[in-house]
Image 1 (cartoon, rainbow, N blue to C red):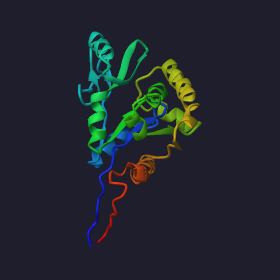
Image 2: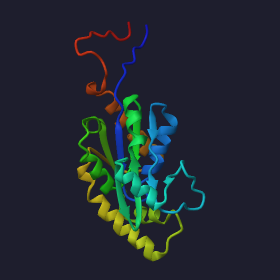
Image 3: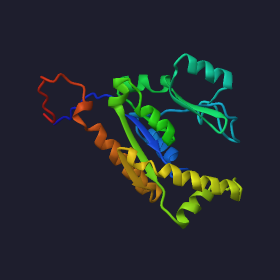
Image 4: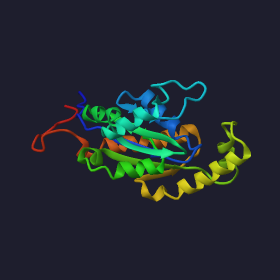
Length: 214
């Protein structure tokens, strides 16, 4: 008996959630443990933080270079946040989708909304969006304090931002409340496994008869 693996189109998976929801960790972990998925690195004009590496954490661009790429239409989505540009280069997405690889994007609600408005039918067909909610109360505050680098004023701002972002959860196809790392990863993986099995993603002749397991 042999298994038949059908070729399929790639998934464009947009993951959003407030700071502390673990969205970046989930995207990176999935891409590192699944050869059919890649984590798309964003570009930004902000300066690197200590320990960050160009081409690994972000593509760090000077403002003039970022704006030139905007003019050339090289971004799938971009936004200016607190005086710095952030965006996803099309070159980080299109080739992978065509090759049947899933592309994971860690975006805020503004970036996710921009991707939903993309006119490209390939992008629209590939899109799957997931929102990760934070638990309320003490656990929320604990997660927002986890980096240990913000002042109380900055923590209060992050809390307000988390609450504001979380109002958008119903705009996404999938949403779940973060529990712990292993539970979140299992939920995330289950969503993508199900999406990979959608018949519309399979690449075969509609009139072709396929026998699996023969």
